[in-house]
Image (cartoon, rainbow, N blue to C red; front, side, top):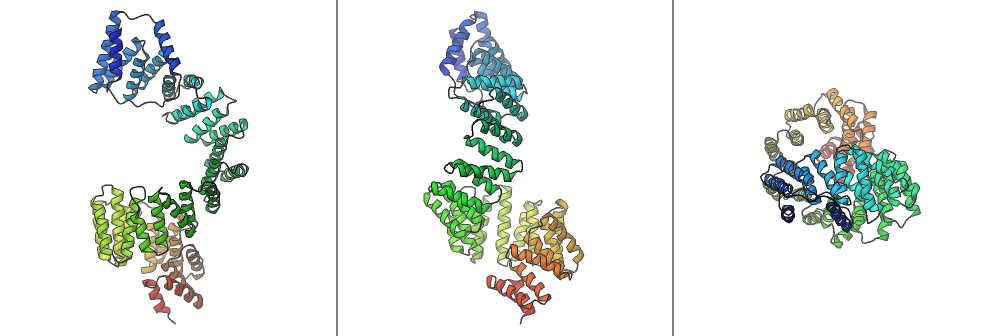
Length: 577
């Protein structure tokens, strides 16, 4: 028997396979060891022939595994597990079967493991997971109940671990059913209902989560995590008003509770109530002035509501903290750029290192360099990045940005060449085709523009940007006004609040002589977004309507902001006083 024990020990430390470990939960190791001894003592000793057979099965299983013959390894290890009275052999057989994706044999192994080590929480946990994936819910519930009973850290911790386990189950319906069955055995335990609510939310069953969270609160009104889940489950089901009311009342009752405040603030962001969200996060930052996550959130919220001075203050505090410096530099750069402080913006972007914002910062740097007149340096920077770029989407964005730098510099032929190169590499890219269509318009290549946009629409008939660009160009550069109106109408149906599409609709209506309708659309576009072309179109319409003073007011304001914009200059020359 000693030789068998030595063999088992050697095999246990060998590198047969890198079997994935199931999550561990606290268990009574001393009790488990004692239980193993009792089980083994109760079994009759192996005779020499049985021990030899067991050694044979283990050796063959090990060698087969090392040779990559997993099916053979599983068969021999399972035979060894059924013959052995050592739970370590059953555990190893189970894990090898799992690694080989032999679920039925893994389940047999787990049952054997539990039989030999009934006090092992880990064995029960693995068995429960396998039973859930096999759809054997009732037996899974029994195994999970053993886990709860064996926990030395309390029921709440046990239920939390079970939630984590079941979240990873392949059979999501069975996982939820197993948790519901387990909770039925603990009807008066708040942490059980909380665990069900957590699992249900993660498994996209917010209706179940709502009921479970409500029951947890009935049992313990101060269980704030359940109240958060209750609100989140209602929001997930579309009842945002009731969700917000729930957390608003909770925050009022418990203003010192940070997690309630965070959940409320995040829900307000989800509801796009940015001003109220900012107020809530400002309340939280007053309690925790050094919380870098709160500083970051407040910086972004302040940008969203266009309170750039406050945003800059929060982001500078974040930068000074030494935490999240890449994000802070990036958004400080965006603020500086939006305010025309291009040199300062460039400095911030230089401080953005590896991370989620690195690529975008590189593109912004190139655009700013182009804006500052360093077109050659900007282009070379982008080409250097492309020389080291492997990912298709990143290469596409580099092509697009290079063409934009050249287009902004009036180098339309060079921009066309770059986009042609990109399309030779990625002929199915609608983004590159769309960009080439815009450059073609500047080169008076309306045939290419129309061809490229129609190619996009053949692939994607509901591409609102392509519909709008084609319709606007036809309205602005041709007499095909009815056709233009049809394209723009389709774009407007897809994006009824898009400022560029509202402008296009106003312009085609102007060209059709429908001035009153045109005014409605152009004013909406102008109110939504300042753009020199929108301003030019509105001024032209107002002039045609006889509103000369307002037309001049709009035109002169736009020329103050964009004195070199060609369309504004042409309109000024046409209607000049």
